[in-house]
Image (cartoon, rainbow, N blue to C red; front, side, top):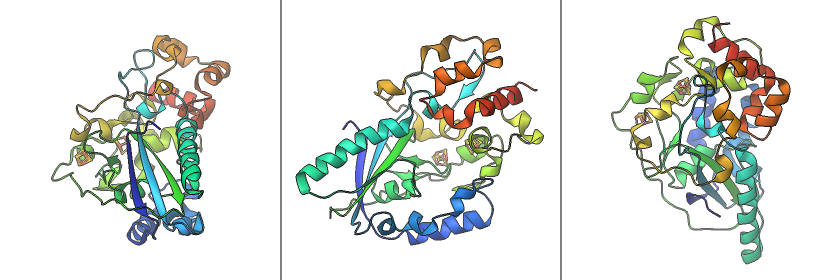
Length: 292
Ligand code: SF4
Ligand code: SF4
């Protein structure tokens, strides 16, 4: 199907990960993302998402862009949001994989891409696709961390892969480079301090004034803790044409971004991850980092 990596894990309960998730929620690190508090059982028990589940098939698909760019020579958006909506792209491929499995073995399963309460990084780590780094991203030794993750939970009994261990070592580059101190300690992200949270998930309208100086020019997401990671040097670019940016993103001057209309937003971003912020959210972010 063209995925970069695939691994299998047994569909058992994620006990340790569940405890860590509870500690994270109790600390309030999920900020305004109240939906994280719901469906806790489903998050750790694949059997509650698909009765009779025996295996979790995890896949990685790179979005590492061949070239990075700024909007109008200034504003930055996270690389995962450069192209088409990854939910659609990944699901198309995973449903094809599901059909292939069903045709061969007569079993079904359920496909997930960041859309249901699934601890995707934990499953991918168990399936030997990498380790969860101190920046909380899943890192593959050959292709780094710029991946989308998807899963199929299935009653098909498959030989599981082995986890590969953690290769962060003594490195702390991501923690040192985070401009807002959102990585409060290794492997722990306080979303309430993270630029990605404030520019994408925050629906309250305002961004705290004290963060303004630290935002740089990020108007949708932030890649800093991935950009500094040594495992992301010399990794290959993605080969998915749908992840390439709309040409208008490369050519529109800065002053036009400041005066973006709802119609322009809709025609450029409706099938991209940026749609999640909405027109009002993106404009708020543009004005915020511009000092307004
Ligand atoms: S995404 Fe940016 S703000 Fe959030 S933890 Fe990483 S470096 Fe910090
Ligand atoms: S920057 Fe260093 S500590 Fe952070 S995730 Fe990468 S290897 Fe791990």
